[in-house]
Image 1: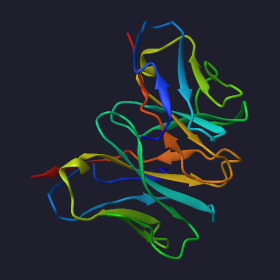
Image 2: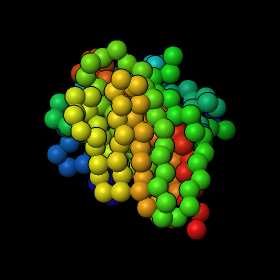
Image 3: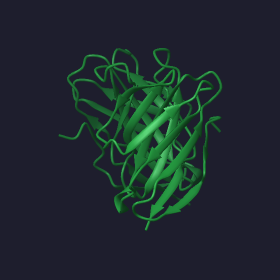
Image 4: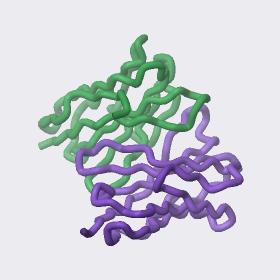
Length: 113
Length: 117
């Protein structure tokens, strides 16, 4: 196990609703990255947070937003959910500029109906 | 253009035999890192092995080795002595230095490996 935890494990939402996913990073890690993995595809980078600020963003619309807290845990918020948002959401923690390795959590499986 | 290409959607291997999973990449950055992750049906991405673009030797981690051919831009994963527990989806990923300060990974589409008893 990596020490990275995510909650909830599974979630079902209706189109148009809002959702918040949570991630606790590994002890000592100051960076959290979020990825979206649609069924049958590789993960796609959403954004990264370093010391409570967004440090980089992939090709995702502004309705995907995030937060990082002083203890380095993080939230991913998605507004106005669409059917295509159904996916496995993975967070990964790391120590920026020290190591390339990212440690992934078990993921949250979101289903939008 | 795809940055990471995995051309084998599915692979089968007999238990105790070796298997090679292919990965080619595309980047213009001189500094980059290549990763392999294993994803069982539970969903968690498990780090297997890392190769830096300036590393002179191929990376090895236990039964995993990375066949790094820089000129061909390939980073194939070799699993020796396959075990039933190796059955999973395998992803190749690349970290590029030019991504600003964010060390994001770009993943391929994956290869589903099935180990046969």
